[in-house]
Image (tube, rainbow, N blue to C red; front, side, top):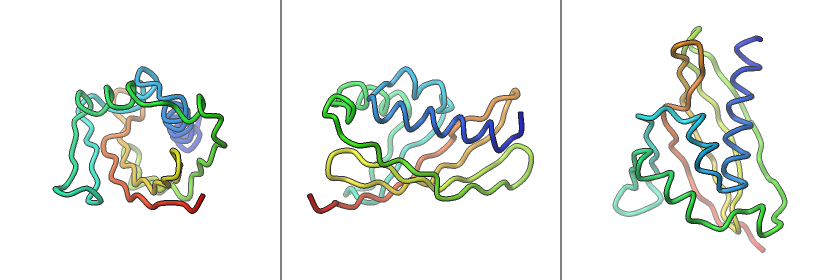
Length: 124
C-alpha cells in the first residue's frame, strides 16, 4: 500500500467518525497525544484527545439528522516518509469546517497529530 493510499484511508476514517459522531472510530486515527485547536473561539480553544473525544460522543451526529455528507480532501503534502499535511473540509449542521491536519507515521501507522481548524456558517 502506498503512503498516499494509507493516508487517505486515515482521512476517510476521520470523516466517517465525524459524520457518525463515533469517538471510538476517531480514536483509531488520532494519536493519543494529538491536539485539537481553533482560534474561532475566545479564548483560543485547545483540547487534548481526552477532552475532545467525549465532546464528539455527546453530540448528535450528522448521520442521525440525515445531513448530506460534505467531506472533501482538498490537498495532501508529504514532508518525507513520516510526516504529512492535509487540508480537508467537512460540515456539521450549518457549520463548515476547514481542517488542517498534521499527520505522522509511527510504528508503521499514520496518525493525526494535530487538528487546527476554521469554522464558517453556511447559509441554510
